[in-house]
Image (tube, rainbow, N blue to C red; front, side, top):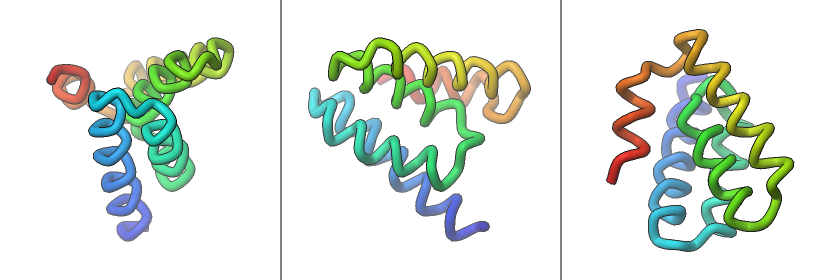
Length: 88
């Protein structure tokens, strides 16, 4: 499980970097893998939603953003971690 979480964290970092660099499809690929490996990280779901939005998948974006909000509300990812990830 630790290996999966480490791999998911690396995918998340790659996805966030790609998102902020304007490479939405690269972000989408990395973030899809991140949530597959660790579906409890709200940050990955939020950025997956934002990447889906940028690529025109508004329905998928809404689902991913709702999942992220649900996980944040349940305390799976702290509000501070989410805020830190969203600010660059």
